[in-house]
Amino acid sequence: MRLKSAIWVSALLRRCTVEGAFAAVRRRGSEEAGAIFVKVATLDGRAALYGPAPPSMDAERDGRYFAVLVPSEAPEMDVEERMSKEIRFDPDLWFVEIEDRAGRHFLDLAAS
Image: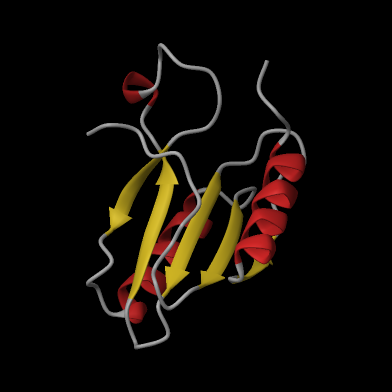
Protein backbone atom coordinates (compact mmCIF):
# COMPACT_ATOMS: atom_id res chain seq x y z
CA MET A 1 0.00 0.00 0.00
CA ARG A 2 1.39 3.38 -1.00
CA LEU A 3 1.45 6.30 1.44
CA LYS A 4 -0.82 9.23 0.52
CA SER A 5 0.97 12.03 -1.28
CA ALA A 6 0.02 14.63 1.35
CA ILE A 7 1.54 12.55 4.15
CA TRP A 8 4.67 11.77 2.12
CA VAL A 9 5.25 15.46 1.32
CA SER A 10 4.73 16.39 4.96
CA ALA A 11 7.40 13.86 5.97
CA LEU A 12 9.81 15.23 3.34
CA LEU A 13 9.33 18.78 4.64
CA ARG A 14 10.01 17.65 8.20
CA ARG A 15 13.13 15.75 7.12
CA CYS A 16 14.48 18.82 5.34
CA THR A 17 13.88 20.97 8.42
CA VAL A 18 15.62 18.47 10.70
CA GLU A 19 18.63 18.35 8.33
CA GLY A 20 18.88 22.17 8.21
CA ALA A 21 17.53 22.74 4.69
CA PHE A 22 14.60 25.00 3.80
CA ALA A 23 11.67 23.35 2.00
CA ALA A 24 8.25 24.56 0.96
CA VAL A 25 5.27 23.31 -1.02
CA ARG A 26 4.92 25.48 -4.11
CA ARG A 27 1.88 23.60 -5.43
CA ARG A 28 -0.50 21.32 -3.59
CA GLY A 29 -1.72 18.38 -5.60
CA SER A 30 -4.13 15.55 -5.07
CA GLU A 31 -4.11 14.51 -1.40
CA GLU A 32 -4.38 10.82 -2.25
CA ALA A 33 -2.11 10.07 -5.17
CA GLY A 34 -0.78 13.22 -6.83
CA ALA A 35 2.60 12.89 -8.53
CA ILE A 36 5.41 14.59 -6.59
CA PHE A 37 8.14 16.72 -8.17
CA VAL A 38 11.03 18.12 -6.15
CA LYS A 39 13.22 21.06 -7.14
CA VAL A 40 16.54 21.40 -5.33
CA ALA A 41 17.98 24.91 -5.60
CA THR A 42 21.60 25.36 -4.55
CA LEU A 43 21.21 29.15 -4.25
CA ASP A 44 23.82 29.87 -6.92
CA GLY A 45 21.47 30.07 -9.90
CA ARG A 46 21.49 26.30 -10.44
CA ALA A 47 18.88 23.70 -9.60
CA ALA A 48 17.95 20.06 -10.14
CA LEU A 49 14.52 18.55 -10.69
CA TYR A 50 13.42 15.12 -9.52
CA GLY A 51 10.17 13.45 -10.53
CA PRO A 52 8.46 10.07 -10.27
CA ALA A 53 10.58 7.23 -11.60
CA PRO A 54 9.02 5.26 -14.45
CA PRO A 55 7.09 2.24 -13.14
CA SER A 56 9.54 -0.17 -14.77
CA MET A 57 12.37 1.28 -12.64
CA ASP A 58 10.74 0.58 -9.29
CA ALA A 59 8.26 -2.20 -10.06
CA GLU A 60 9.88 -4.65 -7.64
CA ARG A 61 9.98 -2.22 -4.71
CA ASP A 62 7.39 -0.54 -2.52
CA GLY A 63 7.40 3.19 -1.88
CA ARG A 64 8.13 6.23 -4.00
CA TYR A 65 11.24 6.44 -6.11
CA PHE A 66 12.49 9.40 -8.08
CA ALA A 67 14.47 9.96 -11.24
CA VAL A 68 16.55 12.96 -12.23
CA LEU A 69 14.58 15.01 -14.76
CA VAL A 70 16.90 18.02 -14.91
CA PRO A 71 20.51 17.58 -13.69
CA SER A 72 21.91 19.75 -10.91
CA GLU A 73 24.23 21.68 -13.24
CA ALA A 74 21.25 23.20 -15.06
CA PRO A 75 20.22 26.84 -14.73
CA GLU A 76 17.28 27.29 -12.38
CA MET A 77 15.17 28.63 -15.27
CA ASP A 78 15.35 25.19 -16.98
CA VAL A 79 13.67 23.61 -13.96
CA GLU A 80 10.94 26.27 -13.91
CA GLU A 81 10.24 25.77 -17.63
CA ARG A 82 10.03 21.99 -17.20
CA MET A 83 7.65 22.37 -14.27
CA SER A 84 5.39 24.69 -16.26
CA LYS A 85 5.02 21.91 -18.83
CA GLU A 86 4.43 19.27 -16.16
CA ILE A 87 1.71 21.37 -14.49
CA ARG A 88 -0.07 21.88 -17.82
CA PHE A 89 0.03 18.11 -18.35
CA ASP A 90 -1.01 17.16 -14.78
CA PRO A 91 -2.66 19.90 -12.70
CA ASP A 92 -2.97 17.53 -9.69
CA LEU A 93 0.76 17.22 -9.09
CA TRP A 94 2.72 18.35 -6.04
CA PHE A 95 5.69 20.69 -6.45
CA VAL A 96 8.11 20.95 -3.55
CA GLU A 97 11.15 23.22 -3.53
CA ILE A 98 14.19 22.56 -1.34
CA GLU A 99 16.88 25.19 -0.88
CA ASP A 100 20.16 23.63 0.17
CA ARG A 101 23.64 24.87 -0.75
CA ALA A 102 24.93 21.28 -0.69
CA GLY A 103 22.23 20.15 -3.14
CA ARG A 104 20.82 17.46 -0.86
CA HIS A 105 17.45 16.10 -2.01
CA PHE A 106 16.54 13.59 0.75
CA LEU A 107 14.87 11.29 -1.82
CA ASP A 108 15.19 7.63 -2.72
CA LEU A 109 16.38 7.55 -6.32
CA ALA A 110 15.62 4.67 -8.67
CA ALA A 111 18.68 3.09 -10.28
CA SER A 112 19.01 4.23 -13.86
